Length: 409
View 1 (cartoon, helix red, strand yellow):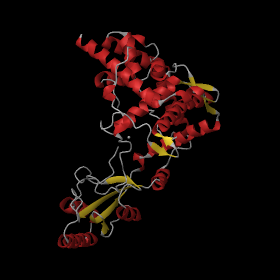
View 2 (cartoon, rainbow, N blue to C red):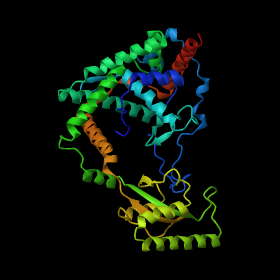
View 3 (spheres, rainbow, N blue to C red):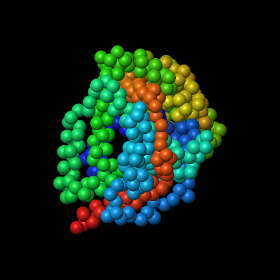
View 4 (spheres, rainbow, N blue to C red):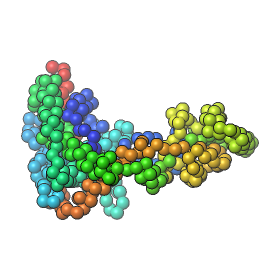
């Protein structure tokens, strides 16, 4: 299961405040390239920038007076309609559609407003469209949460009583802020949420934390050691490095410099390397030379180096960096961007232990799902992500108008 499960606290106040302040619209990352992509391998693409995807500005607001079930109004399925079962327990349309809405918003947020509607028919491979993939991801996330409830029950764990109490308190606070419970309910609808489902999500988050402590905590016997974390870093090709770049191209146009200038850059690189090899403290000198000579346009934003992984940087840089030990300095390395001198930097395992634990937990939950019977229903097949999203936008627009009328009244 590749979609991460958003197990941070889904606080009611945050959901509602975002809805009210941003008009109910849609909402993971470290840029691992140097400057404006000067070390990127160039393989990235903005998949799905198809202009035929549609225009959300044409959405007509829904008539809220006719809505009693936001799930029925957006998908044609009542919220309690069963779309799948895991280990004999029902997964409802409420669970599926919340995550379909959430994943769609997250997908669109990657395009920084340049894409208003997903290209639902875009091919993702093996005959799978983006719509198919998005719906499957939503189901997988709903299954993940349901599995947490089942695993908690198997371990005789229960959500902390304070979770439901906190949701109730936040809900009451928002009723006071917005004036009526009906308006609060509508704001939740705009996120394809209900109060009960929000409580469920937060209780699942609490169970996740309890299960994580049980399975991966310091006294569990499976707590990842520094060596475990380093093995995970090595397995995933994650490394950290600084470099001195003497560019042989114009970094804004990517046009090559003249041969005489390139020869001068090579001579400078050789001289800098000689200074480093002769230095008593080459690491301290490296920083001085880097700050004085490096032409990396990302240096100001990344003065302590880059943390990256296999496939993110151009091949000569990556191969040279991965061949170094921590604290070791490379020879002069030539890439399409110029001459590099690279310093391999250590990574503190503490910075990645949570990620290792997260992967261990995800594997456990996935194994639970795989070990227990899961099947979808005919109702699942009826969900059309494109139609659903258009209707969800219509619902959001209606709630926006309601909020605007309340604020202007």
